[in-house]
Length: 316
Image (cartoon, rainbow, N blue to C red):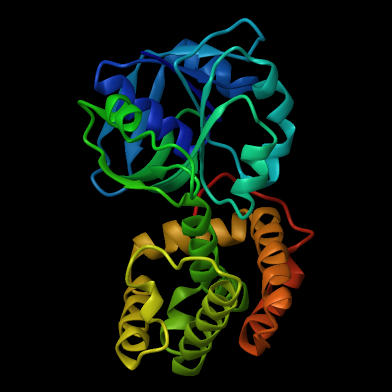
């Protein structure tokens, strides 16, 4: 099985590393000085917690040509970058495309590639790229699947990840899963803008955490009113006191660990363009639903001072 990974950020590099370690024939599409570094020195990944390094000698290309064939192409780009590669993917001979990462319009992406078998996924890893290596935490968990009503591709998913250390969760409604994910993480990202990345400030502010939970509930209510399924299972209980208590403990824990900083705060501050686009599209759904979403709108204002600032590599 020939696999291409488009996007040489943290997510793409970790995916390539795991597939390569499992003996897969995987190629990474990269550009610029990072491509030259990969070709010269190999793909070096440093575990942020253990400080152990791994080095993989992998195949690297700088473009996807029309005649290039792969059994699967993983697209590991930011949501803001996806429109730039759709034509290239549409013209390529490969049939199976998997988009990894945040996405509020999975249905639109799939519609733009009518002759392809399109899937979507989300992996649990975070970090940043340095001059000569990727520094990250990779939990080796992936949720992957198709849009609601599409033919299942669970067998293909099993083949792709066979032999890897990934914990694979197959989801038959990835469009709703990704919308639910955005509804959960965006209020927390807004709070990170308020705190200027200082998670201790959030942890000490009970009222702010409760506002994050309330904003999450507003967005979930909007999605539910529009007929979307709240995923993963259990999120549909968002109105209960038990759910709110669980979320409160989660956010307190998130703000107490370096993993929370790496997975949430660092990416929120470094990928403002992506957060802004996700928020704008979620806000459109909220408006369509008729839900007031006062807490969501108030938290969103904290992002405004950051919109003109530069972006760094990361994933949320």
